[in-house]
Image 1 (cartoon, one colour):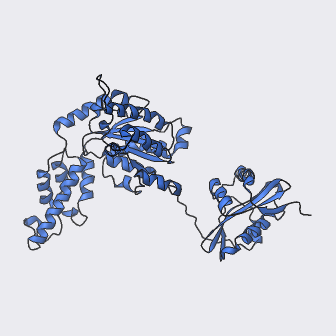
Image 2: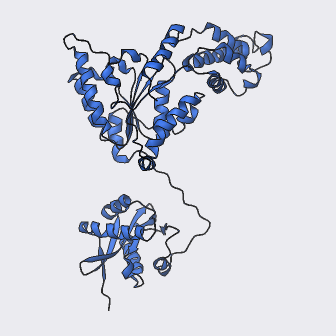
Image 3: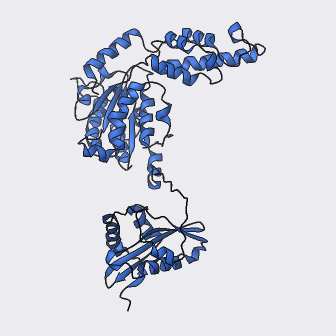
Length: 433
């Protein structure tokens, strides 16, 4: 006589589903779908359970997608296996889905799961030579509205790889920031506390904003840039708007929060009567410790003038690292020139000569010079009868070495010798890497 029965899932069955899930894990079976996905389908899709008295002993959960159904979860307690419960559960959940007019019902099972008789009994056929691919979407649907309100976005996944050169800086950021945040469980095992806040400092145009975006891209976390100048016009004033913005950011599961030119709201406070801007600095100093208590996020502040920052702003406990981002070396400049020179023209260009001529240039300076050379070559091709004015460029489509050297000579370096020297002194005095 059957001592169990099949019925629809009820909300009070959640604890029983959790017990089945834990039973699978205890037997070395890693379910394909996360527990959160299974529970969501229990509530929103189709789920049936097997009960003996008041005890839940098995469950089948499924969802429909267009004309195909998927078995999300099927399990029975070990003591109740071999009694046909799994087969009955599959039959029951399939009946519940009949109204969808499905033409196929599919299931993904872990390789370690050997108890698949229920599927065979219901006529499921094992498909050979298939591979299962899975990709986690970094931002959940429920977060998209909040992210849009904050002006945030998910950046392309390849930004990190597109940062040309700057090998030393990339390696430092990879090791100190990306690794502990991306591998948080491994970091915890080694006693490493993932960073929560970092300052990037250096001369203008050296790529601090680019690195902040690349970090977000590398982590696949939403990128939210906070613009104090835009917040200043809010009814509650800049301090209040800043506080509310960070409260809104707290609703996101993950985020890289970026504040450029942070010296505008965190400059040295003097002993004079408090000014409105000092109130903003005070508010920011309060916000950072609260931000640090929230896992899954990183604050990146960038400044061209680190000496102007309030001393309390940079102290230990607020920022984990204070990292210099300087001018590109020869290797980095080589990589940048190769990135900006058209592939069809690069073989005919003396890249080594451009690297030497552009010493002291920032990445922004190199990009400007390269774009200017391309524009110059285009104009020459279009308005000089399709030929170049220099013998070197005769018959060549695209910029040549002379075009680049001319634009390099005409480009004024963003970073002066005095600023470069100050930067080296700031590294000695303030950097923490």
